Structure formats: C-alpha cells, structure tokens
Image (tube, rainbow, N blue to C red):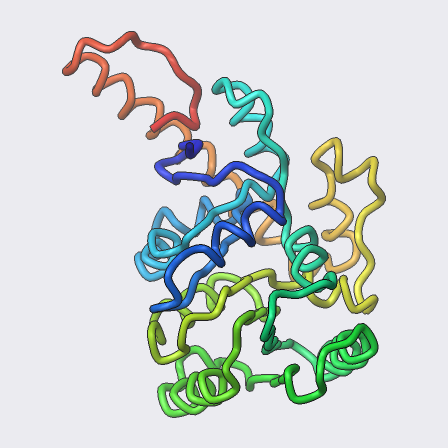
Length: 264
C-alpha cells in the first residue's frame, strides 16, 4: 500500500524492503528509488521533468521528517523515515545479490576512491565497481550523457548510485531510460559524500526532531540559504492549494470534508 501526500504516492517500508521491491521489478529500464524531502515537493510543483522522474520511480521514500509526521497525521502510524543514508547503508552491506556490479556517479574523486577501497575490501571484484565524476552540467550534455549511459550499460551495472544532487540525477536517469539497462538506481545526492566521511551528518537527536536541515545549513550557509529560507515558504502555498482542491473534490463527490494540507 502507498501513502499519498501532495499528490505523491510514497512507498512504505524500510531501506532493505525498498531495495528488494526495486530488485523485484523487471530489469527492462532503470528501477529508480527517490528520496523525497520538502525541497523536492516544492521543485515538483513547477518542474515537469522532475515530476516525470518521480512518476517513473519504482519507489518514493519519506526522507524529510515533516513528511513522516504528516503521513502519521493522515493515519499511517507505522511509517518510518528512509533517507539516502539508509539506502546507501543497506545497498553497500554484504552479502550482495549474485553478480552485483556497482557504478558510482560522484561529485568528487575522493568519494569514488573511498567506495572502491571499501567494496573491494568487503569482497567485490575490482572490475565490479566503476566510478565516474561527471563535469558540471553533464545532465544537459547530450553527447556526454550517451557516453556515460553506454559505459553504465557495458559495465553490466546492477546498482547505480548517483551522488550529484536533485533534480538533475533523477531527470538524467529518466531521460536515458533503457539506454542505461535495468539497474536499481539510488539518487541520494550528498548522502554519498557523507557515507564517504567527507561531509558530517547531524547528530541523531537533530535527525529525530526534524532539524537535520539546520545542521546542513550551518555547514553550507551560502549554498543552502535560498533553499531553506526562501524556497521553503512556497510549500505553504502548495499545501493550501492541496487542501483547497481536496475540499472542492469533497463538495463534488459528497465525500467527508476532512484531511490535512498534505492530502490529495
């Protein structure tokens, strides 16, 4: 069963459950898992390509704690937060599926170096792990995109992990489609840098009270000020529109007029 908020169908379960779910889908195209936070909700409102990527994903996790709280208010009491950190931890833990071949698209070379050493030390063959650091704006470079997609497919990738940020990761994967083969795809952004030990993560108590965003802001204020203190206000308008649309639907259909701003 899915949990619907802001016209997005979220997939319940823990990280390992979602990885198994994705792997069970036919490998005829990339099997993308996306991790939704409030910034994603805002971006989805006016970015059609990002929305297409979300619609094509095989699973959408509740990453941001406010989304988890809202889902629980809607009655999904057992729902849990699943972050990019959780997906990486579950995906990188041995034992792996037979024939596992991992391709990492990293923001900086040091991240790839870390994971190659870690995965080979844990038992994967060296040629089963591939790494690339794409140039800035790679998602708009058609020739480079075809080249990278071909490399991923020739590698026989079963798990593709992108640590280059949203929405470009999700959009690029969806545009490439079957050219990538049929790997399970994790679009985890900076969580890949955190897993490599190059970027700190908020203390557990801040994660639990929904303040992880503030910890990230303190470590990159110039980059994140607009996202957290300007763009985030748009969510209020999105929530009010969702509530208005639900009430209009209730009037037309005769449904009870109840729900929260995340209802759809």
